Length: 141
Image (cartoon, rainbow, N blue to C red; front, side, top):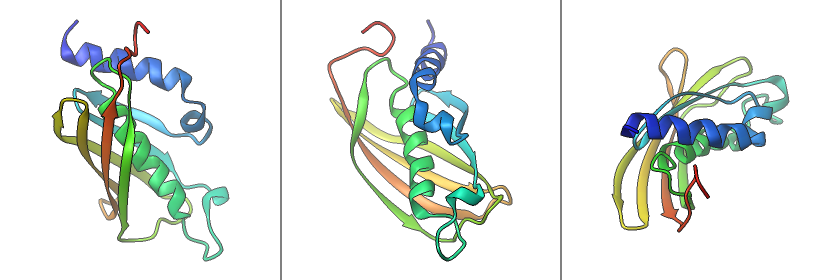
């Protein structure tokens, strides 16, 4: 299996079991070794008291892209920590795209950057995730 095929197989298995992402309409639009793209539409149910997108949902989208990027090597990998900077508010109806890119991976630790954009290209948030790889396979546990 090529690295690309492995990444796609891992993503397919994870997505099939990811009830949270599927129930919120998050889609995985692409994966490759150490990278992924996740999408989501901001619905009325995701708006806060200021009628803007609740930051937790923007974080969730970024975290999802992060998770799919760091789980492309057939090793169960979880978040060790993450930080987000919100730059612009999301609005109801916005189509958001989170693009995750691996910055470094050494031993069991990894560092990933995720940019969340609105469909017009406006950057809404920057997310940095730190991963920890466990001693288990995704495809053949």
